[in-house]
Image (cartoon, rainbow, N blue to C red):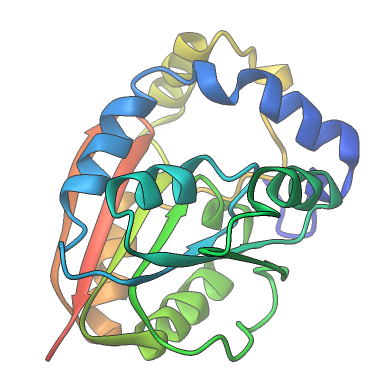
Length: 212
């Protein structure tokens, strides 16, 4: 895939994703693993690339005393977020494109993301991970339920088949990076307790903690 393709600016692309998002195999397993990793003391959460609000909704159901900031740049997704959380004082919805540096949103006990960061180029992924580290409180966690690269083209085709997607239907916006490469980036930035806590084919939960 090329770094300059991003179909998420198109309403139709976002709508097509929403039609299949809840049918992604094993997704609920990954989300359950993510929730297990969020400390009970968490009170403020940032969700990067929130989409229609599925993940931030799960997190706030799990931690009803917490508040969250939901960030996305798609008009389609922002409309869904506003419809879902417009009357919920626990959630602030902000427009932001992850291709650009994060705005000053304060600090957070947890920063989460679900199938969003793989749409930015690798250099931007690394810069974004550093920005995430800066915005976590000491002891805060970063949990990225992500679409990652397979080890071989054949394994990528196997994953697409499991989704019911042909190679011709593969999203050209995807800029996939291997798990271990991303874990190395997190360690180099200064995250500790870095690991992949769950994985199924090209879906993985990458995690790190900001040192106290």
